[in-house]
Image (tube, rainbow, N blue to C red; front, side, top):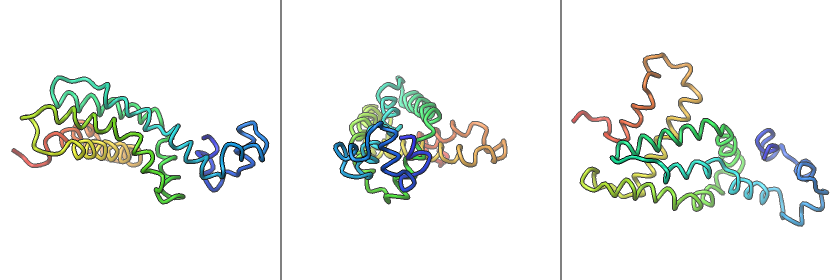
Length: 179
């Protein structure tokens, strides 16, 4: 995990990986056929998003608004504690062109759908949007907030940073059009 994060996939050699694991170089092949298998196992087992998914089920709120705000807040706190989420995703996107993301998504899908269903359960309060779309847009908006905050947040004028998180949640809940 540490080698991939610090050196990238191509920068980490099998010899280094074996050494870190306390195995002889030949011994690592008893467990994995190649370095890509090691990376995929690591991606699926240690990806920080796995730790964030329980927030989708654990968030509290009696109203849609309370539920969305609590979920977003919990997930954002979790993202802040696991800075390696971007490193692993960029390695996957750049060095593998995203070909393993579908495996990670399959593992997270039930929790994402559970959140979408929790939102959809508030019938009459929501527009008729399928639960998978509600969940997908929520994850996308939260991730876009995290990315922009992490990379350019400190450079933005105070006026653009003030209550930015609350505005993102408002846009998710109510859109951008005045009623």
